[in-house]
Image (cartoon, rainbow, N blue to C red):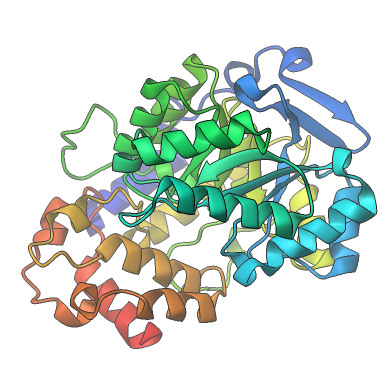
Length: 403
């Protein structure tokens, strides 16, 4: 985003002209009695046609918090935990298995995932899921997802056959996908094929950012509430939505105090922004300390104040040049097949989430020809980027930090 357009964006925020893309509370929530139910201190929403009533704030497990924090999170009403066979080398599932034994299987909904790749087979997928069941010490998984699903695997026979066999054996209840990139194709196909009950995808306040270039996929893609179009599409088929990557900051960690509104942090405002959308059933987030738990759970049933919204949107305007929306257009356009989208995602793990070791391992797993070291500075990635991200600079920063 150039300086002129950034100034205009900031001006529009301050003068409230983005109100059309930020729906009113009445539009988003409709009938409160049917949309949410309260139990104790927590509110619960229906996860689409699964009919599972899950906590508005749910727990991510890469990594999990220490035992005392974990027990307190469940005590506070969180009843949905998202995990994967890869998180903490399987130890995330093992710890959750111990948790289920301690608090009762009926107290928690568990979602875990498997990978679908070129060399995957029906048998290898089934083996992966059975391994998850063993680590979780349970007979069934509530929601089974394809991890970071690619469009080509959504209706792949190997994947669908594995799902079908596992379902017949009662090893999971509902099936879904998680989506890390190329949302416009992946989510659309998952909805239209009719085989998936829920979708977990990245959704955060940066998705209000308007594109600078035309998107030829469909109107309003990712810009000015474009992902809201995908959420509405899913809802039209009663497919549940869980938002992830909600507490996203643009670029390197910075002092965010100036974006606070009273005692409310910018992270709390980010959670409130997502929960305003009634098409979202829950926000999955990691709560590693008592302080983080208190910060995140404090937003439940709290109003999203106009001043909080204004400060949050100013933050977006000032930091959006460093934020990758993971739309995948740069990667698909690279003549050298450099994994730009993946590299920028790993950079976010390093800069924004503090997952430095994971980010380095993930980057080192890339084929050397697909890393930033192979970039010839042709600029094609930036020519197609709808948001004006300085991709060449950012992937070189990633290479320096992650190599």
